[in-house]
Image 1 (tube, rainbow, N blue to C red):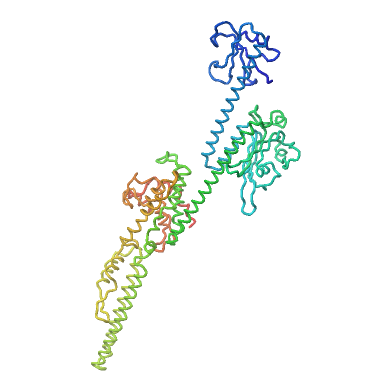
Image 2 (cartoon, one colour; image 1 turned 30 degrees about the vertical axis):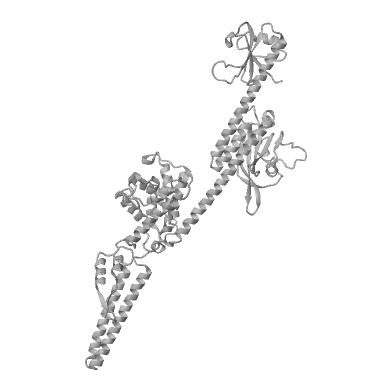
Length: 620
């Protein structure tokens, strides 16, 4: 029978208890070192209503806060003999034990439920592993522990990774290592067989045990591994994905074990209760870890799908290849700078890891709608399409041939009608006229080739185009021909870029296409704003953007960050055949001009420049 403490509670009942029960129970005041259970014999009538003088046996929980707690009381008639009082005291202790066990089971169940909730909510794998091992040690009172994970190596097959170790008594210079998955180690044996290993003394395993205890750590750290409990981490499908190893159960000690002598003194074997608790937690941990791995696998699959989709879309326009990846990188870098801000407008703005992932995917997919733009418009690098320019070249060549034929015909006509008289003079004049006309055609073609470039044109280029359009020549059939048609002339008269107004509208529609395509994806809660962020990256604060002309706070903060990143990359890109890349300083000056005009967010641009976010893509 364990020692029971009878506390006199300031009453003379202790004297009676000592007289009646002294041979079976200790009668002494409660002390901090005593067991956390007590029975009080007291004659204090204030503890319960008494009809007549009697002895009162009260069960008291010393851990309860506040005044003297209410509890279980036994009324013993005055003059009751020693056996009756002893039985009443024994019953009181039995009731206390049952109540304590029930309370412990409720507490442990609550702890397991809380641990399960915590494990299921954790998404960071390293934190998850730390939580599993820490909680396992807490509920079993273990001084140390380690965690092993079963992994599939492409070439080496299944292996056991020593993933984590914890120890309250010695510092561990831990590094993860990979071990063969065999039965020679305790963890390997458990991971292979699914058996639970519970050793009262790890140095003395049962005879015939297939595993060996490695004492290398104990010898180098002057540690004593005594009791050991190793349980498998098994999923509901029966797959063993790891092993949980707990070392040195110390239920009555909270501090470290400073020596091997203290380990021998305070360490106890793991009981059945510990085995059940560790097994339950290991099962929860296996589910949480399997879910984490599944989540990671799905995330990697989705990430690969997004990258492959972006690569496929950008392959339609090789001149912008890599643009989406760079915009995503710059945008996330700017968001991280905003997240670090401890003053100014963004001091209260913070982004979670999932919000940064959402922003990264929005950056990668911001031009996804270009799949809905006709390819020849998408890749148009000159004002005229190659076929259109070739048609003009062919037209000029035909006009030249017609002029040459006409000159030859005139020479023959002169010779036929007038003979040799004055022929040489007339032929020279016709040759001079022909040369002048051909030179004029070549000059017209040179003008066409020059203004066909999407670069900034001289101020008089419109007049030159009008002159070419107005000038006509007569072909061999007597029809008047021009170098340019009115439609071609209007296209060449574009003052900025290479796109006509209708083509520009079609290109701008890619933002609408982006939203329409992305809105069809059943995004998770973490990524639900991707369509909205992506479709607003061409909006400007002053309403001059597209497709909706949104203003100010109508534009999400993430989209405003992406706008800066998108413009910067477009300015500095070296792979655009229709324009030269500008230097970083010039690109930043252009962004400043846009900001001063009210189009860009000044505070974001300040961060972009001060934090040197633009250097993230300097590898180009």
